[in-house]
Image 1 (cartoon, rainbow, N blue to C red):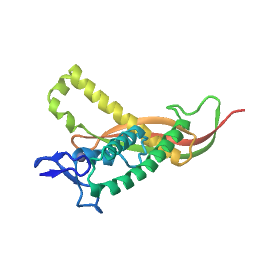
Image 2: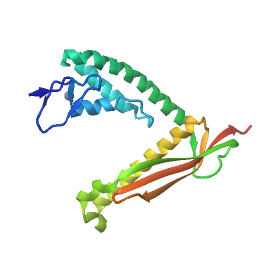
Image 3: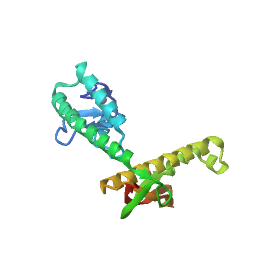
Image 4: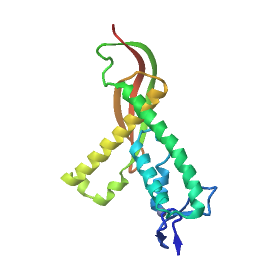
Length: 205
Ligand SMILES: [Zn+2]
């Protein structure tokens, strides 16, 4: 019986197995630990809470001494990196907070000093996941309708967040004329795109 070298849980024959990393391919980990590990990277969407939650999860396992001896050191090294990833992600969020966003083409009280670029950001939504709802979508039943609406709304939010990151990387102060568009790429694949013009602005005296 194989056990996860981080959380020590049994990995059944039908459960997914992962390796800690290419370098530590002998260390087998479970799907849950792998998921938590994947959350530890720099997150340009500023999902800082996910990094924090995963760090806490691993730190607790280390603390209670359940982690396999061979996995301890690589895990500690990973957590060290995650600390930096968390800081980097906080920086992203902080920068985005400074950014003004509008669907219009100006801000009251600000003067546009430079037009930088027209930017776009895309998120691909797999609507195949709605297939279990089957005909319900056609009926636009309340429940199915709500799920679809929520997924679309999340995807739009994510696209906007990506767009804001791109604008921040260009040191823009604002995004003007922000719009969303949707494209049916192939069957079951929807592309949600957010576009806007990145500009530098100055507060009017
Ligand atoms: Zn595990």
